[in-house]
Image 1 (spheres, rainbow, N blue to C red):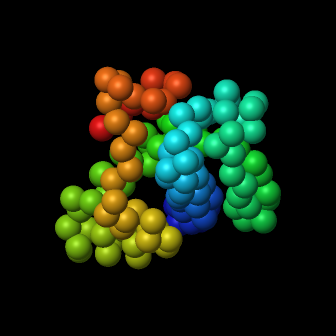
Image 2: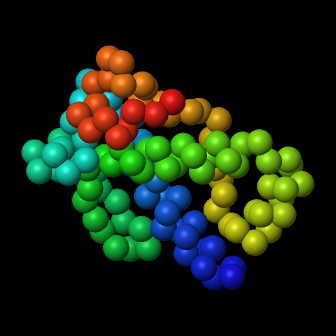
Length: 119
């Protein structure tokens, strides 16, 4: 099981943190278009290279929601539970981020795809 968890953390965690960083940068610039519509227009786009495989993507709002849910599930774990998981799951550092990224609720939401509205 450890090899599976290692590849997940070597690919999923960097992808999610890159997506979140790109979302923060884009929203900081006032961007409101994400997902495929943004990619097609060259907006909210970022590059990554997990395990040496380059890619280009637009910020995905569903990934923001998934990453938030993963981190929220991690946060309440007791220290001994985290240590147990960290022993078999290297690379959990991104889960320890205390900031909660929130796109906001649908009322007044500036996000084009409202599947992104989560708090």
